[in-house]
Length: 113
Image (cartoon, rainbow, N blue to C red):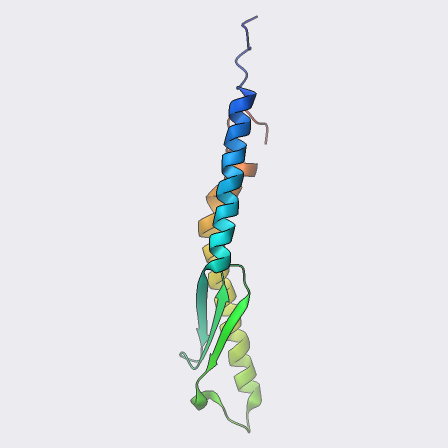
């Protein structure tokens, strides 16, 4: 039998895993600090969320405010927040996708997962 049997160096695998974990943590920190916007009603309502989905700001143009029709305003607010959250999810996939795949999708050679 060949010494080592062609098995990967465990120390090297552990170092790769630690680096990937550090990269993932750094990307998550960057996401938490990054803000993205969503809008509705042609920009009458704009919501800003972090890359992690935390609502940070909501801007409502006075033209969107009709005391006789608060339902439409509520719908615009919900739509703007949903659009902002969708943008945050897209950002998460862009930043974390490659890292998350590396941890659980065979990104480290020699590991069975």
